[in-house]
Length: 149
Image 1 (tube, helix red, strand yellow):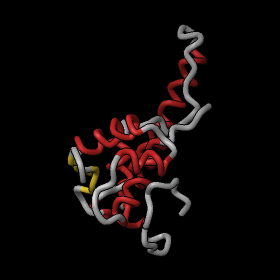
Image 2 (tube, helix red, strand yellow):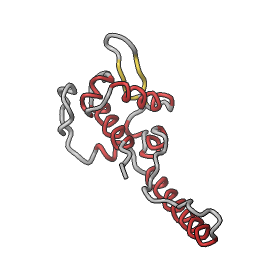
Image 3 (cartoon, one colour):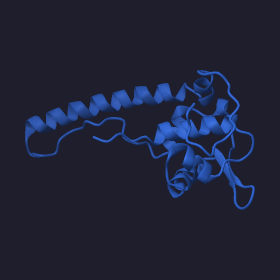
Image 4 (cartoon, one colour):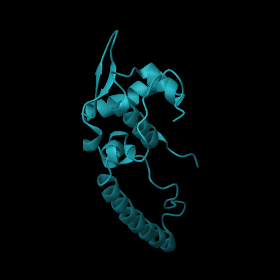
């Protein structure tokens, strides 16, 4: 099953933005991530709606952080990108009348809900600044290239 990389990609982008002087255009971000600028704008718009980034149109415009990295948590960004599914496994619905399938699904649902709640609590306790502290500060020179750092 294909993994959903939206959370990881947006964390990546936001940490770069926190280290970048000035606005970053959708094209800059798209080139850095090897993505389509339209997809970047759509995803960033969700972050803007939550008040995590701001944007200015036109020449000299682009995306900037609306909050410092210390005020953004993994949970904030997870929610802003649409709360993608945490698990690739889930209950089956092949035989909804089967009591065994119902029992299995009920147990799995309870376990998955508990695990997701634990993960959300952990996400809430980690800021983007915590992640950014995990590597040395480097001067970001050219976002016109794919990210290699």
